[in-house]
Image 1 (cartoon, rainbow, N blue to C red):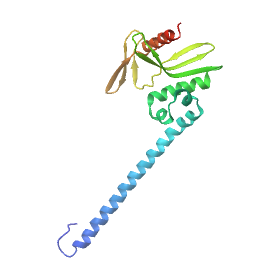
Image 2 (cartoon, rainbow, N blue to C red):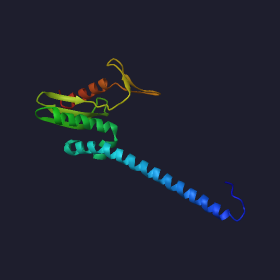
Image 3 (cartoon, rainbow, N blue to C red):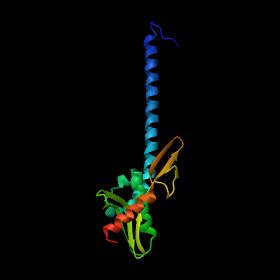
Image 4 (cartoon, helix red, strand yellow):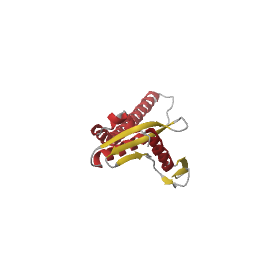
Length: 173
């Protein structure tokens, strides 16, 4: 309907304002519904991780807070390994996290997890990666593939070998 400059102009303007108010209300409802939906999804995702975190000794051993465990993918991977050791490895286990040790060149290296028990000392390098991973213990770099991207990263087998040697040097083995 065309609004003219005649006497029905006020009625037409009122109708346009009502129409805009109705659309604004609908948009706000859609936005609030989406926020509520995503908030619910976030709570569903966070709650199980948080409950596992509260049952674990990971906080005491690592000093890492729940928020970082929930939102940092790498830290969450370390936490999940820690929980697996806590729950499933029988006997006494002492697990150290984020252990910094000197390397021969004077710099340091960080070991994600070291577990000590009656069977030995386990040095664990955690990678919480997704996508397709290609690599071999023969190559310096491995590649992580996604549909339109690829990333190279240092061979974790070599990285862990460096960690084992650094630990041996630190405890004079």
